[in-house]
Length: 218
Length: 293
View 1 (spheres, one colour):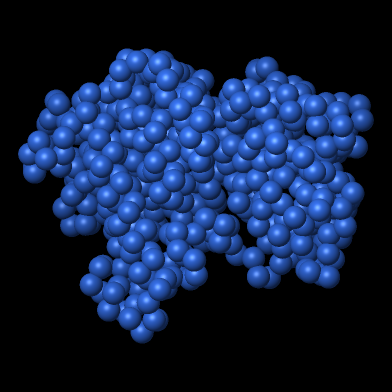
View 2 (cartoon, each protein chain N blue to C red):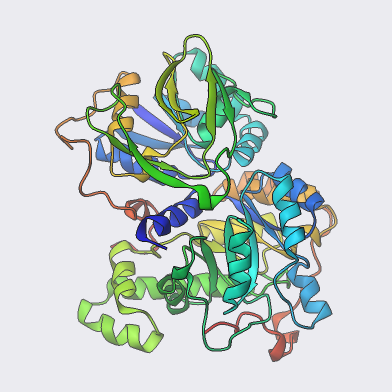
């Protein structure tokens, strides 16, 4: 079965797995080189990019992502994930450097500056989608071959190349499945449209992730 | 704090899952912690082991020190306030740090009330020894929970006791008929609505980290295997012989907590850990975990 992986080193892994499951897509945690077999796409989740940066290097996962990307693996980075994928990070050296964007870490300020809003992203959904920004970065420039999906104020919030999607916000923290569906299509998968016709899943709530980390089975 | 702000605060803690938050007392420490892969730093004047040795009243750190640390790292910065000291919390909120720890490690300012955390925009993490204590803190507005353990001892036994207690009480709650929840909640000091939520979710509704006595990569992996979502290390890093190396080793073991070969690799050649304390040798008045109501 064709599968989308979620890089499971640190961050909001469970939240992405929950969204994939809601679309009827097989999702797996990716921790080891062996976990990359049969993947058509990999999501690099939100978390702390400096921590993920270290772990990717220490455990040799960076080389595996590079190699699998050359073989056609599609990539999506949310927040910290977008930073890791960027070719340029303001004031720092890049990590994976696979998409020609320039990104600024933690560009809004402290947690008190985290926010939610709504925006229409015609490529991804017909209706405005809810967006959650948590200590988010800003994409300040995109290079050739990279299309802007959403521009707000002085920054770019979502962009894509033919093989890579980057979002500085967190679709996995909202009831909206549109971005996960969009990425699945990019990976050549056909998510079940009939699962959630509107792509706002009314059965999702902000504690849905806990189902993947129970102490006691309910 | 409206519901949306509270959710954003819970969600920041979700981003920290699988990571290590490290106590730092200087900007230089903070850089070492960030370099090693910490997901956040706890800025304070003295690590718990020194607070324990030096005694006296432990208060919120000098805001200048916290601001300096905030200036040198890009990861979230947390800092501690005394239990019940809502003005220290107002000061830290004005300083625009990322998370406040209402902590038993500092000398409590109020022996009856914790801070009404719903009055703030900034998120709070609070310590707990059992499910009731955790849920009372959530009821007061905490967006994240940690075990108390026994800070500054380098002895993981209390943190293990606390997570095992939380797990046991969670399993009891999940498995009991709903009509027994009222009595169970009354006996154990659970807010009833939150007890029902735990019963429905099969775990705490917010992220729960381990804290208090974690000193080695194996300690961190132990707490993760027991079901914690991440790790706080206080004195364990900068009271050891080689802080940079130990910090990175604990980060590795936390990420790969289910992989004994990687924990082994992380445990080799770290030099001396911090000196440990036997809990039974600590006078009762100096036990920190019992602070909190």
